[in-house]
Image 1 (cartoon, rainbow, N blue to C red):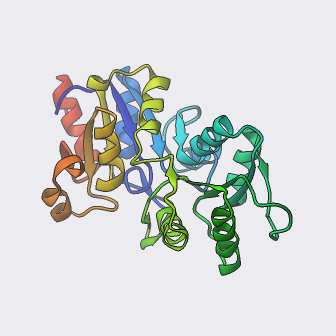
Image 2 (cartoon, one colour):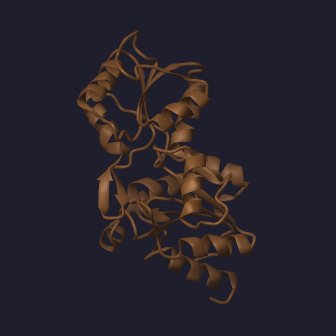
Image 3 (spheres, rainbow, N blue to C red):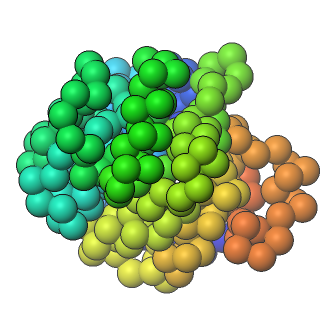
Length: 272
């Protein structure tokens, strides 16, 4: 392992599972801060605003998370607003995503019913209030000509006692039903990783992407030209990691963030 100066840390399955902080996460960020290195939380989260994520990190004991959270939900709303300024958007997601869309200058429609003209855009996020009726509205809009965006393609979400269906499960259902592919904003697309490096002023050769998903974090990191590290505390087993090939194969594999910290200290010449 090299002496990296900037760390991009996924959240679910890397820093926490649900409300459970994972081994070594707090200590790793504390060491990065103390040694002048950089850390940015880069999450495919499609539920919460960056401020809400920072509040959770603070509650769980992570040091100084304010101002260093970049979520795919936030990025998706701003990407849509840039391409379709003032667009009418149906959000298949929670109210927090609707608030982010409105903050980006978009007009949220079809909250309670499908009255009015077809929206300009359908944005698929993690919708814990999902009903068949809401899914039907999204399908009708897409087939009626609405642009189709999805925050991410996460198949499942790691929580304390197992997994829940992720945003990708909903987006894939709509893709299958409509015959149209969603434009993905979060990982595995590299754009959000490149934006994170831009915010940090980080060089690719000095940056490490730490994630738990082969098809998400690892693919995105490689597409952005940076070194990738997989931890085994989330989506991926050791057997799956070892069997991965091509762009899905991580450069480094660790049991957890505690082991990353030990090796980072060794790479820097510090005492472990």
